Length: 395
Ligand SMILES: [Fe+2]
Ligand SMILES: [Fe+2]
Image (tube, rainbow, N blue to C red; front, side):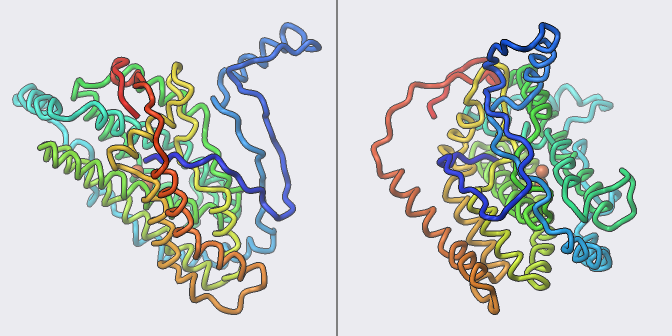
């Protein structure tokens, strides 16, 4: 999934604990006159493993400590209402259900058929599928992100709280997505696996910057949005595979989309509960998250070559209709409706302003996008993608 939006950021209005603000481009090292050679070497090493792009001012622990009690008191609720959205392993599909069987005599024929079908798919489709697969493969980052959240993190790695059980089982379900797409793409023979593998390594090393501030209100709003975004984008890659005659790939993307939908249901249910317990705090969190914009999980993507890789991949996804600016507005509109934000009452003055802001935002985003689309687009020269052996695509 991906989306390119204007890089406008809104500062958070709350007084928060600001911890880190690297301001240099990590791949444009500056000479530090005072640093000794060994310090310089160490800094260079640190930069080479850091995020490829500037990371914004990072805020931590923005949820007031007294609200931790809310999540503690929801432990029983989570056990009864959240865990039922997980599927028992024995009832789950596995990547192998959709791939050639390596133990069978028909393996080579099955691979040949897969490759024949893949020949019908265009390069721009493969670039988007690769970007989606790389996004799924950075799963360690997403489990880390969930475990940054105060009050719900897995404190031991095998914690028995419902929140921790959810996070681990959710991760285990998600792990099948990247696995299946990765194996399919490998067998297709259409993409440069080494470049893709490098991109995954860079991306996991870079992490992500979702601006969720260790705050479970922000964190669960973010995951609600993301699960729906992945549901939409995998659904669209399924639809396009079908249009190109590859029913097997359509089934692969469709089965992943169905998981994302189930995860969306679970995360939106958590936020619905927060709206019930703390409507003011939750509407403020939603407005805060939307002012900062929902950044895509793979926004720090890099392949060792293209400094604009994420933007370029997002542009192709937008052009072929896998994930668009319209989808972003639609997701927000869906969530506002799902959480009945418009009918919230008894809010503080600040809460009322937040409510007004988020309810009017989908229409505002659409108007801005329509205006941007109406402007004559500068013809851009085609861009090479290392994932498809440097072949060029129009953005
Ligand atoms: Fe996924
Ligand atoms: Fe997901």
